[in-house]
Length: 114
Image 1 (tube, helix red, strand yellow):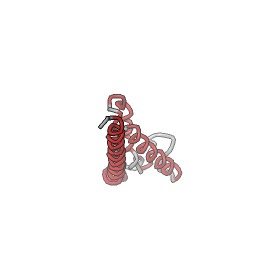
Image 2 (tube, helix red, strand yellow):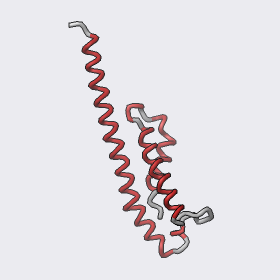
Image 3 (cartoon, helix red, strand yellow):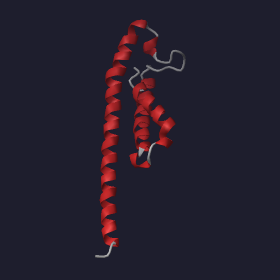
Image 4 (cartoon, helix red, strand yellow):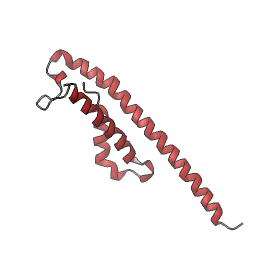
């Protein structure tokens, strides 16, 4: 229903402040992970008629009884997707920064005379 709105919200917030985040965090990777997942899910939801092009846009909001179900899905599935994307991004950043650190040390050893 609306699970994609949770990672979408983080992607929008990070996109607004990404210039203030140091390059070593590769924040553009997180934005791409979140944006790709959100785009795919939004298309899937459109294909299944859960998102429409007229207000309230989310069909779950047309019936008051479905709103708590939608919020529960956002809290569980949306949060899980967000946590998974952030965990993958963190693992990638840690790995790449570690590799760059090793390369820097090796390169530095080759440049310093013994």
